[in-house]
Length: 295
Image (tube, rainbow, N blue to C red; front, side, top):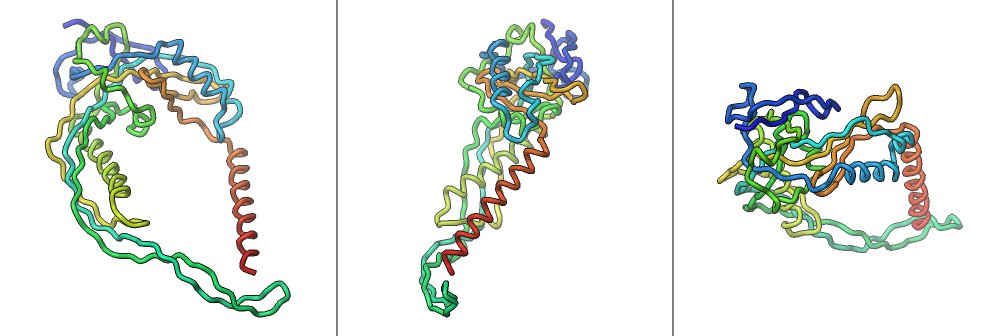
């Protein structure tokens, strides 16, 4: 089979070192890569991805140190990262409490501005709760989860979605000349990750599906049928940013199709403190206004 470039070390560590290695249909742990089923090609060229990151930095991050705006790109590499494309039918059984709001008028005694005891009324919103249980079916199609231990599922989700309409059956010619990361999570691990993701999606669906003004799901059990998890390669630009001589390199990911950017930037203690003080000041201000309304 043709030989391809696969990363000798994790590209997330800002290394450009690659080796040539044949791709065979072997199991993870054998030292050889599992051949993917599908691949998505790069649509964003290097120059565009770099320009997008510079613009992203220039806008400044609210809680990031100001030096971040002037970070330099230390290295940049286009990498095909492995992911499992998952689909299944999720059947869920749930128990919940449904809250229906209603208003009532209350009478209370307080002191007016002259110190006199006065009786007043106010409208109060209360909630009546009732129990509800049932079943819910979700067609989980095209959920994407990481197949690489160097990339968390949260990081992959942050640069999604990918345009799956551009998916192509894997061919060695499609990735020749690019770096590609091997799958280091088994298919079973990918299915576990996908089930967790689908379970969370079911919870969000129920929140919008159930009646009432408020909902509290007490139990949710989901079983999965017709599960399929196929390995595919997705295009990602991986950048290492240097923002100070003594600072750790920062990793930024750019979706190679859409240009969506993800970066776990450091927090500035000073800016965080100012934000907290500002929120507290606003809460105190509104607290004074509300207390004054009932005097």
